[in-house]
Length: 519
Image (cartoon, rainbow, N blue to C red; front, side, top):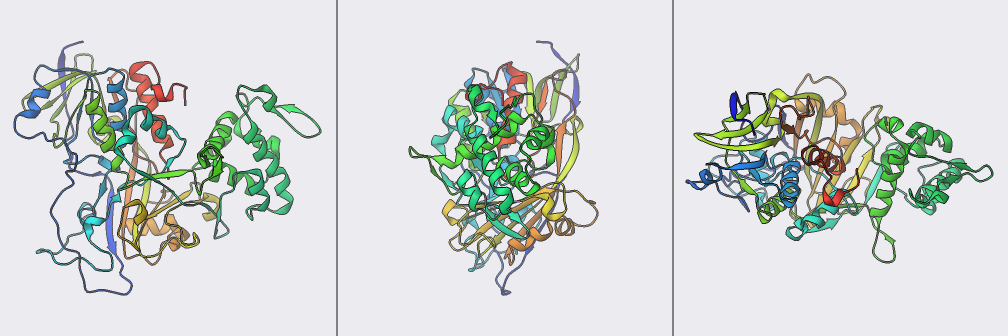
């Protein structure tokens, strides 16, 4: 380990993403004179105090394998996996709560985070919405797949013992302004209104072949009725695979966006094996139990919101010997004479490490903005229009339905997931900004989300944010710093776990035990 010589000043930014633009707006139908009271308590549940002199013992003379900056879902997941593999880890966060951009807030604290001032002196909350503390509002809502990678990691690390999950009760896709349930089996395809009658036969053959396909069974690689063809999915592109099946665009849209969960048309350049693997993950997540009965959707969501995930992993970091300190902003990231990170400084105390992981707010000069995400979180007293009385649902609006390149995602949950009072729903709409960033965030949301906003109206209160999507400009090897990217606009966590696995591999040279096969 080279000694720390050259030093570079580190960003010490405040709570929340300072580069984002936010707006909190209240809409009450009918108008009410009641106003939300100001409650000053911060989320401190399950936090590790770094007060008095205790934190200094984690710094003085300590050598770690990895220092992790931030307690977002990705950072906490990496800390747990690295500790479980025997690495010595110190995790720091400038905030008084876990989660960073994966945190969940009560209603009053969400208002404060978005710059909405509550009246001084408190007062009774709006009786139509309930106690502000009974809300658990995600900064970045995401669902997880029942048989997905995050589920595997939760089970492997034991973090699932610190959480409760509930199924999402519906999965829908928009076609010509209407929402339809997403079919998975060949039988469902034949009855779905998402395809014309003349398309259903070929579509049902396609879905049946995908369901039968097994990578290690060559007999399942053969396709075709009259003319048999062996499909080498490793060598075929997504475009060639779909062209072979001669699928019409409505079927492709359903399969790639609704089932394989691609955010745009990038699947055309990806290997066909990836397309099939993603479709089978959707199917496998739908089929649970010994009888293989289909579930209402392939998704799960934590009780009390996404903020429970980083907390659960932070607890397991402690179980596996790691150290986590909240309310511990760093003053410097230390670099050696070769420009490689070798530690951090807090006040007069220094902690050394072989490498450093952090979210983009800790490394502003090491990241670039590649896109912007616009997100609207709404509190309503009705379910999503077109989803019936579903207590929770996942809605995909393919970009083509709104004359866009990127999909729009709508996630909705209610009190069954303990995120809001009874008779309320919390919905989130998100997408990638494709137009100009000029104007305020509400104007951007109106332009980008368009018809999707109609699904949540009327809303009693909503929060609007435009956030940069930042990624590291290098692979991190030379600097020995590995920066997680911002959470994207999609409605699920699979891509985030892929990134965690890739960073883990770059640091350790192997894949996490729960994800031993490259994903």
